[in-house]
Length: 209
Image 1: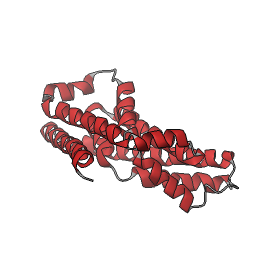
Image 2: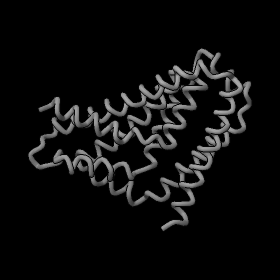
Image 3: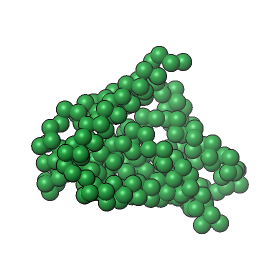
Image 4: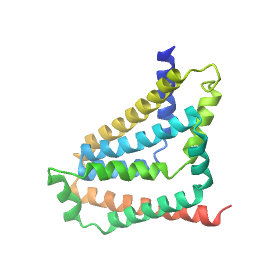
């Protein structure tokens, strides 16, 4: 029984994480420019945010869920502005600064983790998606005990983290095969993508009904 819940939780975690979006773009960019530790820290931030959403969806924490959904617009706006800022920083970072980061022994992994965690949390729609996954699979029935829901949530984290580990590993493998000039170009393109995504989210929230 528990194995089934872990397996289903992992499948849900993978399903939520695979659509890369801004978090995937940032995780890939950090892996290429800062290395595996930064990519793992970023992926961990995304996986942890999905896990927190799974806790809210699984245990029916209506106060938190209602707060996030009621304040979805300002939360999304803040998140989109942060994306714009990150995209701008990528575009304006010189090659020396970007690639010099690889030589430093210490990276601000906490900042990498927290930035992705907060950005992922700025999209409360994930709660609705996870709730739909749980309900459609019958995991939120009254007969489902809290222990099994906890196991399911652990599976969500494991599945999400498995995906991000895979992404970081693939990017790190191909990174060494890319010339420095091409890596800088990719960094600039990534900055543009993140910048456009930030503006697109802000515009959709403010002007699209």
